[in-house]
Image (cartoon, rainbow, N blue to C red; front, side):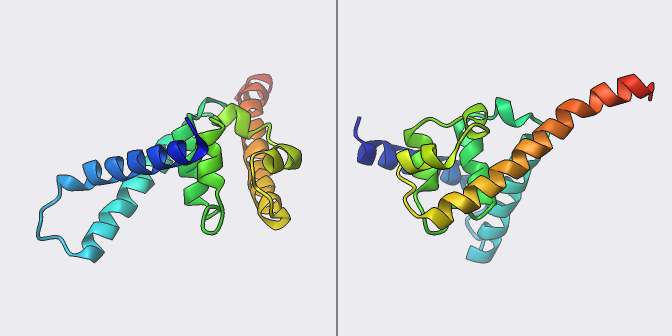
Length: 139
């Protein structure tokens, strides 16, 4: 499957999920009400992800994270994530070189994505170490 076909497939899948989530709403909803409902759906998804270690995120969850951090506004991050099947575990291991190989050519885009990934790594490390410290301190 070519990159264009994969990208189209991912876009269609995203549109189908979006329509499925919103199709149960009343037809009388205005555009603003539909946008609000879409926002609520994203909040629920992000809350579910927040309770799950990054290393266990699926490719879809990584894409949701990118969308929620406004990292995809002018780049092919989401498409690159789908094309290269970047799960949460792989996301934590990305480097500038790997991003460049994935087609993220603009240095400023790679830099902003790597900064957000660094925050995720730190958060992931803190969350994995917290139970150890609590056990050691007896709390």
